[in-house]
Length: 322
Ligand SMILES: [Zn+2]
Image (cartoon, rainbow, N blue to C red; front, side, top):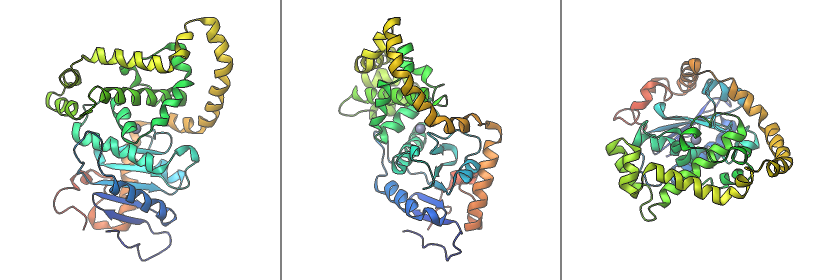
């Protein structure tokens, strides 16, 4: 059931509850909040994972200032949203977000997939798997387009999976390529078993706590063989460009085409980059939790803040929302 809108002061925070989701925000974003809640409830399962059960708080920030305040110095994904798995909280930009923030329903699905994966596998998955999984679960197939114009891929060839982990928070063009490559890796892994996808793999991973062993058991290949396959197939698909990059003359010619694209992209992403660089992990948790606690406290003091530690118990009996 949707909670009725608070008897209203126009600027009082709004809270919507349905199933395992709570969406909080301000009336200016009410339409968006309802749409997000509807989307989350309607499609509350994620490929190859058991249905998630943990309660989730989705906070919709009314403006950039509040968004920054709530996330603390953490770097948001594409400037649009961020998930905090330990707190089962997702913080998103409201309708004031720029168009580069993407479709909010896709963004939310991506972040919810992170939480769903974390609910099953905890901290086992490396970053590349987390991002690749979230991207596949959210159906972000358009991501691969970026590979066709990826300067890094052109100049350096295919990276290793491990080296991707450090790239997601880097400069925007590299991060975009890392997301696309991670997406491909998870999609390729799932394609190794056309019938069951990652279902068996996830089970083995949880059981043995080893990705290597799980890949071998589920797909009959080693992790190194899988990685080689991913590199080869990606190279084959996008690789006309990457292969030519070995020839310096051809690379120089290509650069005259690619550099203007690259610069245009950089300009577009500059604002986002500045914000990401300002990140500082130390102050993050306290700032976020206190801001969220304050927001929720205004709405329902007795329940405690979902952003705070207690929220992890939100799916325990007695703490659930009517
Ligand atoms: Zn992500």
